[in-house]
Amino acid sequence: MDERALPITEHLAELRRRIGMALAAILIGAILAYNFSEQLFGFLLSPATEALAARGSKLQAIAPTEIFIAYIKCALLAGFVFTLPVSFWQIWAFIAPGLYDTEKRAIFPFVLASTVLFVSGALFGHTFVFPLMFQFLNSWDNDWVVSAWTLSEVFGLTTQMVLAFGVIFELPIFVLFLSLSGIVTARQLFSGTRYAVVASFVIGAILTPPDVVSQVLMSVPMVILYLLGVAVAWAFEPKATSEETSEEKKALETVVRR
Image 1 (cartoon, one colour):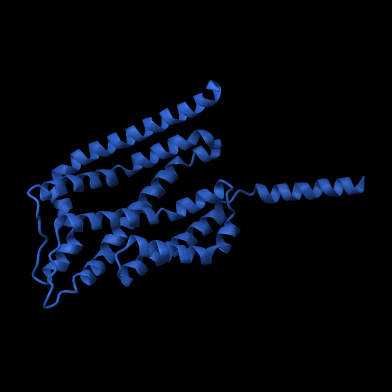
Image 2 (cartoon, one colour; image 1 turned 90 degrees about the horizontal axis):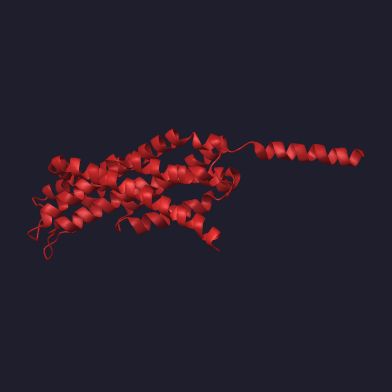
């Protein structure tokens, strides 16, 4: 019983160590980013502040510590993004013992691709989706109600959307992993495209505010990224299956001849 529990204990200890190293890197990155927190804060919330400025309004800080806490959160978010290579490296290092030697050598492409995809997703959302989203949400003022957005609410929504777009842009990596691990084949993934389309729009509706523009601008890229992942999985799918099939055919022919 102890022999069975020992490997699990070792895995949990290794996981805890990897998480600790990733969190330490994020903390160091956040401390360094805090020196530029005002610039990062202005850049992160620019879609919302520009939408409000078009109507002569500004964000409001209700609590005395709201701005200071927002700066700290902004530094933590920046530290997380800046240290993504370290986090992805720790993820790969944790799963590497269960991989083949050829797969272990893919650590650099994995870390690079994962980082580029996450940052690309966050920038795509911030550049193209957030301005349209906040303009839509700020277009409902009337004679009875005037928009008075608080800093904490806008910062929370912006952070949520940044992380959401970053994660969904990791879809090709996830699809490739499913194929290489043998859970599903690239052909099966392609045949399930219609289900992926439905799932993409459902996820887009859950993660975005209730406006059609932001939902579509999240769901459509998800479909494209899914198909991109399927194409990459098709290209990198192990060729062992076809070789094994030919060997089985040769063995069967040999048995028939005998």
